[in-house]
Length: 299
Length: 341
Image (cartoon, rainbow over all chains, first blue to last red; front, side, top):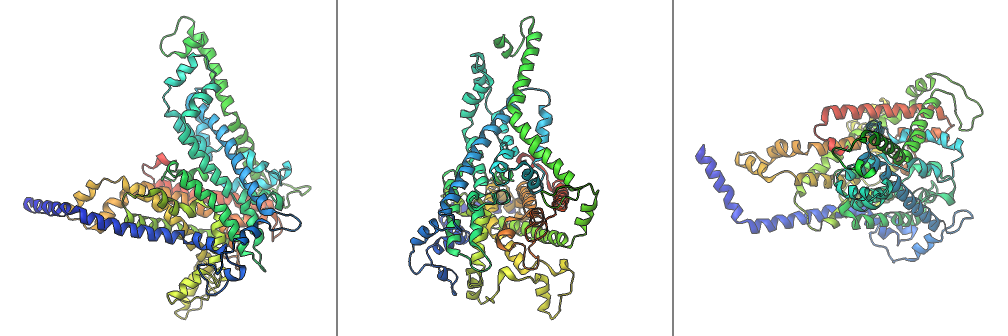
C-alpha cells in the first residue's frame, strides 16, 4: 500500500512540473466559458438597448433583427417628450420622482438607522437586549403582510397620493441597523473614550468619531437602500395613483396596454432605469459582499 | 465627575451615587438614539399589523365603507375555501419549488465549472449581477418583449428547430397536461394541481431562474474559494473521482451558502408579485395569479369588487405558510449559517 501511495504522489507531482502549459490552457478555457456565460446572461440587456434605436414596427417584426436598420437616436428624444393625457414631459418627471425619492429615503435611513445602531452597539441600558431581539424577529415577517393591508391604514390617514407612506414607515431599516450595529461594535473604544474625556457629548461622538470611521458599512448600506428604493415597485404602485406623482418603475406600465404597446418607450424607460444602477454597481462593486447581505437587507 | 465615571476601574468614594446618575443619563441617551426606530416601529409595524389583524375579523370591504362589524373567523373560512386563493397558492407553490431548486442547482453547477479566482472580477461581476441589481419591473418588461410571438425567444427556438409559434404569455395549458397529451391522454379534466404550472407561468419561472442563476453563482464562487485545495489533493491521492469529490467535499462545504440561498429564495418566491403584475396581471385563466397579486387586487378593488378584510385574512394565512416553511427549512438544513442572519 505504501508503495502505491508513494507512486501516486509521484504521479501527482509530475504534472505539477508541467504547470505553466496546463495552467494557461485551463485559464483560457475558463475565461472563454466565463465570457460566454456572461454574454448569455447579459444578452437581454444588449438586445433591449439595441431595441431602443428601432421603430415600433421593427421591434415586433419577424424574424427579429439584432441590430437596428438605422440608429434612431431621435427615439430617445421622442420618449423624453412623450405626453400622457395633458401632462407633458412625463418621463423627466418620473425620473425626477424616482431620483429624489431614492436619494431622500436613503439619506434619512442612513441617519436614523445609524443612530439606532450606535445605541445598540455602545450604550448600556435596560431593555436593550429585548428590543434588539424583537428587531431581529421582526425581519422574519414577510413584507407583503404589512404592506398591502396597510393600504387601508394609510388611506384613513389621508396618505394615499403622497410620498409619506413610502418614506415615514421605513425611516429605519431593521436589516440596516443590524449591519451597522455589527460594524460599530468592531470599532475600538479607545478613540471614543478620548473624546468623552474631552467632554464631547454622545451625539458628537457618534457624529465625529463613529460615523467617519464607518464609511465602508455606510456606503454598503446606502447603495443597497438606494437600489431598493429606485427599483421599488409595489410601494409606489399602491400609494402613488396619479401619473405625475409616479416613479419610473410604475410609470413604465402606462406604455403597456392590451391594444397598443409602445415598446420603444418601454425599452428606453427600462434602460433609463437600469443604466444608473449598473454604473453604481460597477463603481462600488467592492462594497457588495457575496454572502447575500444585499438580499437580506432588501427583503 | 463625568471624567472619573468614564474611566474604568475603581472610582473614588461616592462613585456609586454618580454611577447611578451616569447610568440614568446613559439610559436616557440610549432611548433617545433609539426613538426614531421605536416610534416608527410602534406605529407602522406593530400598529399596522394589529390594525390589519383586526380588519381581518371584520366585514370591511371598501376602504371608506361607513360602518363595519366584527364577523369572527368568517374571512379566514372564506379565504381557505376560495377557489382563486387555492389557485394562487398552487401557482406560488410551483414557483417556489421549481425556481428554488433549479436556480440553486444551476448556480452550483456553473460555479463548479468556472471555479477559479477571476481576474477582471469587477467587469464579470457587473455583467453577472446585472439582472439581479436591475428592477424586476425592467427585467419583466424586457422579457415580455423577448417572449412576444415574434420575439427573440421564439426566434432562438426556430434556429434550433423547435416549434416557434408559441404565444408564451397566453398559454394556460399545464405543462404536465401538455406532456401527457403527447401520449394521447387528455388531461383537460384533471384537477388544477395535477395539470402542473401553465406554459405562461413556466415561462415566467424560466425568466426568474435565468436572471438569478448568475447572482447566486457568484455567491457560490466566493464560497468555493474558501475550500482549501489540500482537501481535493488528499482526496485525489486517495483515489476519489472528480464526481466523488464533488459529492463528498464540495457540496457539504457549500452547505451554509446553499441554505442561505434556499431560505432567501423561499421567502422571495412565495411573495412573487412584480413579474406577474407586469407580465400577465395573473392571466391567462388565473394560471399566473399569485397570492400577493390576489391580495393586492382584493384590497384595491381592481378588476374585482374590493374586499379588504378578506385580503387581510389571506395576507395572514400567506405569512403563516411562509413562516412555517422557512422554520422547517432552518430546522433541518441550517447548521452554522447563523452568521448571515
